[in-house]
Image 1 (cartoon, helix red, strand yellow):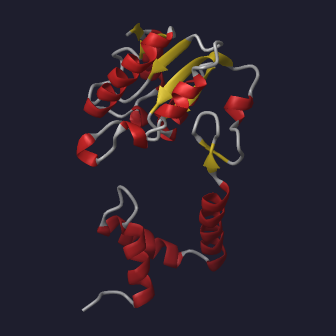
Image 2 (cartoon, helix red, strand yellow; image 1 turned 30 degrees about the vertical axis):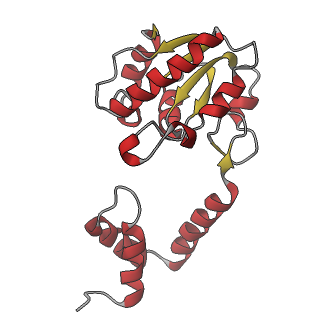
Image 3 (cartoon, helix red, strand yellow; image 1 turned 45 degrees about the vertical axis):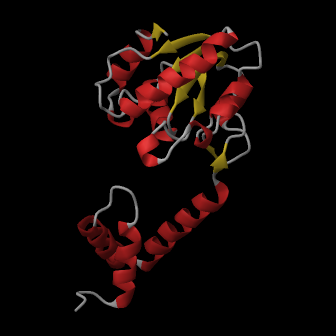
Length: 199
């Protein structure tokens, strides 16, 4: 026998499909949403639909954007000769919070992971190599997560990029091995950026 009415059960089922949301968390969220004023639930639903419809990937760096080209790629004050390669938008946002990096980004949309079926052709590597055809790019900073997948991705990219004559650096070990950049504090990220090493 089900503890909740069908609409609540359906909401719990949908919320539990989100990453990091287990059944109990989904139940808490569903009950909270049900208890919210109707206007607030409509605003939440509208924000979700609007974000899904309007957000796309930047045609230059592959980060999430509400236009064809994101504000960072359009910014003439950024150093377009230095590209930091990150796995996803969360890592990009973490570095932006430090306020220390003045270059531009390239978002891979993941990391190499044969166990999870993520091969090089599923990442935005071809798009990165296309950007390197512009002779103005002088340095690529590999800022993938310091875990097995991130390290493998960094090594793979380094082997592809070095022959092109572009300087390849890797963020320094200020970030704990096995950790995620998304959860690393700004001071540690800043030190890792400053202490990056040539690969």
